[in-house]
Length: 114
Image 1 (cartoon, rainbow, N blue to C red):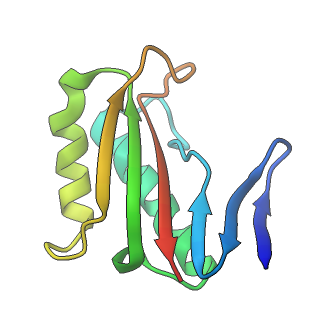
Image 2 (image 1 turned 180 degrees about the vertical axis):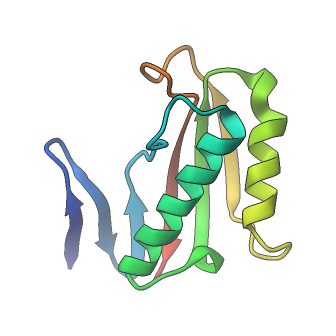
């Protein structure tokens, strides 16, 4: 069975299938902030969406991070490492992109188990 959650005008934020949650791209609410703060905001949003859908960050399976400047990767990693426990890290890919929209430095896509 497929269940769709958190509809937006163009997509569902989360789709559930066979005990797995698939998240659409998540960006920071305040895009005027620097990389570390945008990453922290995104992780908070992910945590809230996980909780709303019966999961938590220890059940994250995979993450793809799109960033506009690979020179900011250390700031992103600082927020990332602070949010996770040492044993709960998902698989991860970080991809440099040219543009994510005005002020958006990072967009994160995750998959999690229920």
